[in-house]
Length: 322
Image (cartoon, rainbow, N blue to C red; front, side, top):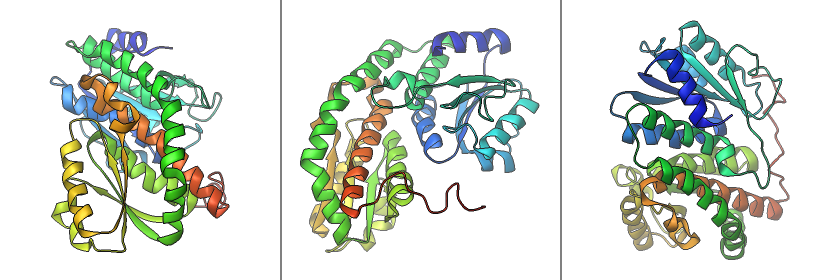
């Protein structure tokens, strides 16, 4: 399956799409967020919204209907909220595409299009949800009116594949041990980011650290930092800053300058120092979340080694009834 042919088939079957809904939960929802940001930025003839799946079901948008495209993602394929969202969308006449790693799972029911993707070390970024979502969004833009950066999107994903191995080595060598040490010293800390990268600010907090490391932390949007949260800034408080290479970097630099002046514990992960600046500017903002996700995986692993806490361990998820 590929994004170009899939979008072409959908448009041939449904006509022009009027709205797109991206639905998932947790890390799967986070993977779809950059694609939603791309459509919010570039689309002029249709709209795009991302939902956590349960909210999509409980507060179903009135615009959901035959001219809607619903892209769902469940890595396990068995997330009930996502399956329910697909069922609801199908009943409304929408086109449904479900992404999953698990063939034969609940979401791979045959009722809608299911894209089963590979997962693991060495899989190209174009073949996993962040890349699939970006390509589906780019193809939809192009096939419904033209998207000048389509070739850049395909090329940019290949560049991400090329830069990540060295980036992983660099972040481990330069930040890994220090990050783990700071986690030992600070039971709670803040993570800042903005723009499409904010998906990975959120992800680092709720997935990599809270879920996989049981680390107390909080995410803050760099643009919102000066509208409340900066009042809590003081020496002794740890801040982790995701400094992007895209259009929202000035927001992050402003927050970083204030932090450097008002606290004594700041760690910066600067995408420009890892080669992300070489990705075409037209698509960089929407692809660099891939970089921040990969770096979060390395940092959570570094913390896990020091705390003897495997990122795979859970105490509630999939264990208790909730």
